[in-house]
Length: 128
Image 1 (cartoon, rainbow, N blue to C red):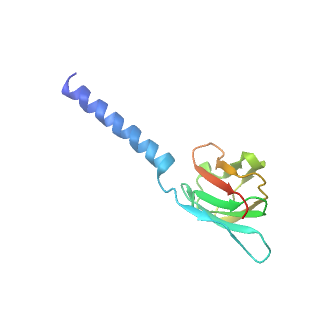
Image 2: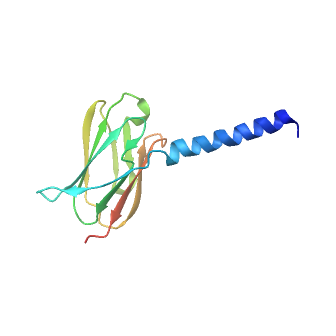
Image 3: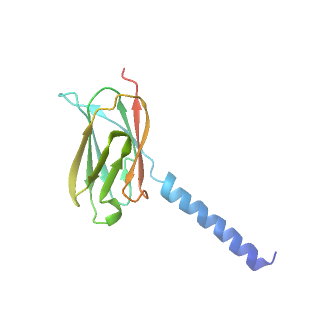
């Protein structure tokens, strides 16, 4: 293998590693929903090139209200899909869009943009 082929191979491997890190691992911060006086678990999720926090923990059997604040006009993030709970909704730019449901079964559920490029997770934990 020539030095130029070796350089291209190493560069390609580094680029693949960066893509995996950027799209699947970077910015994975979690948040735990807190129940308010009305018993609804609430979390604000900022949408700007990704979801922050990208991992949300809630308790099973209690109502959840996720408030997606889309702080951009990028068409990739204009739609939210949370298939396990039948959610498919448009997120208005520079505004909060509430998504409400009650998760019954503990588990990890993915949510994403309509194109499947931006990802987050909802972790439903057993009720205490």
